[in-house]
Amino acid sequence: MPDQPTFEALLAYALGDATDADTIRRAVAGNSEAARTLRTIESTLTAMRTDDSEAPSPEALRRAMAIMTPKPQKLGWLETIQRVVADLVFDSRLQPALAGFRSASAGVQLVFQSEVGEIELQVAPRPSSEGEGWVVTGQMTPMADDVEIVVLSGDGDVVTTTMLDDAGMFTFPLETDTFQLMIRAGSGAIVIPQVDIE
Image: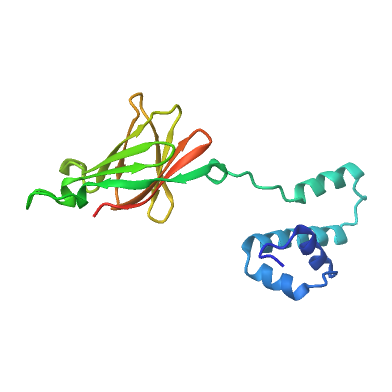
């Protein structure tokens, strides 16, 4: 049985008709959504068994079943688009430099390429008056319409979103030294995997 028991399996378990009750019990113990659904079923059955009022109409039964039947979750755009991982083709930190002229704290230039386009990033320290962190400025070529840039933490949590301006540029502040980008263009996206600034 999968980690998420079906509604029918939970109903059979609540009615005492489940052939695999031990499996369902273990699945419910490790899955809060299944446990919540089972509690709803059990409280509904208890109410139905103890309610001595008039029998519900067929329409009321249909509505109750519609409410209790789980609806498929709609996928967000991040789950439905085709993703293309961009390759790092230039990192200013890997280029020969005059001694003492380059460090991560002075900024970093990165260029990523994919079949969809090229992304150039400039990462510079924030001015000291604005506190700790970085300012990331990027440009996408060729430019596309309605491009959304999703900034993700190193753990994959959404930090912020921004859009391309009329020149194909984007800017966002960054608090951490690690980030990822998901650049949505049409029905696809360019993924820039984890970037470590330091």
